[in-house]
Amino acid sequence: FRYVFADILESERSYVSDLQRIIEIYLYELTRQECPWFVKEKKDLLFSNIEDIFAFHKVYVSRLGKLPSPHFIRFDSIR
Image (cartoon, rainbow, N blue to C red; front, top):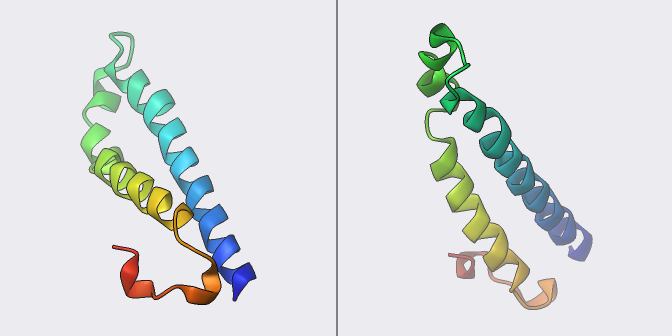
């Protein structure tokens, strides 16, 4: 069970890191004046709520990392 928990935690950290890179690199590029208008028009389609998803998972992974030893975890305590 300990390894499963460690794997979930590492996967979440990686996911949060990837989301942050997407926001910093790709979303930023869509705000630049040089970005073609037809690409800017698709911004909401491509990245509709990515910042909300990032915010949620950033808090979630932070709380997961603060939990005690996996042997004593109740999954309803992660909220």
